[in-house]
Length: 94
Image (cartoon, rainbow, N blue to C red; front, side, top):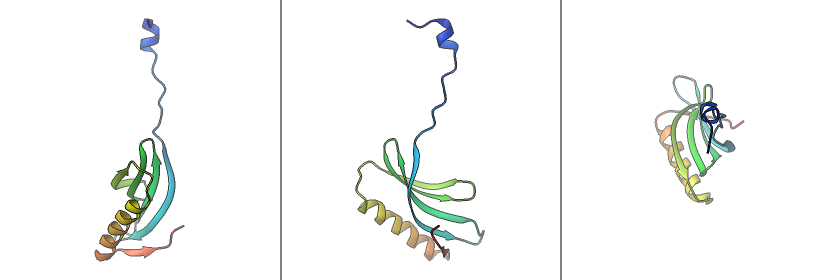
């Protein structure tokens, strides 16, 4: 059984795991803000994210529960081609 003091003590904040595995592509549009497609390791598997780099502004993400890289690479390529078709220009991966 817990005491009143135990229940009223704030729980420590535990940030979710978000470990950068690889940056797959970088582009920029008319706003000149760099946008990247990157793979992150999260608590539940791997996550492909499309995000602006300057303020880590997440635009799109897809969770992959397995460790297979082929579906991740295929979806990243699809996102990359779609951005390039909308006149986004390629940036070097740093």
